[in-house]
Length: 101
Image 1 (cartoon, rainbow, N blue to C red):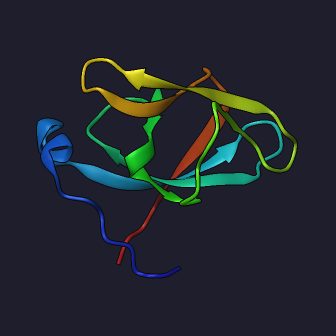
Image 2: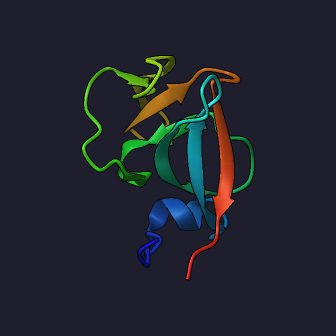
Image 3: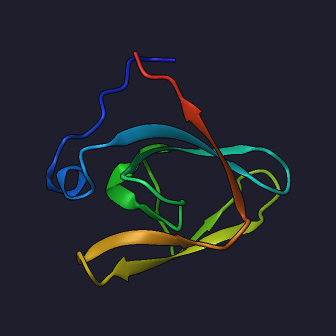
């Protein structure tokens, strides 16, 4: 895996400065769908578009698995911060923390 730098900005600071890299995969088929920077504590309820590292070309109104076409989440604007994100469906994805260099 290439060396990935985590973003250090106001959103990370607002969540206590704690970040980790997650490998997000489809719960149904196990296909890896994204590499994501999660800031702060808590469960993964939404994925902000500016925090999705791979794939870098996320477009469209829905977040689906490329292999089995399972619908994992829908795009919306998180009102509290006015940021575009995908609202994930409960139990739709699995996540694993990835070690960074």
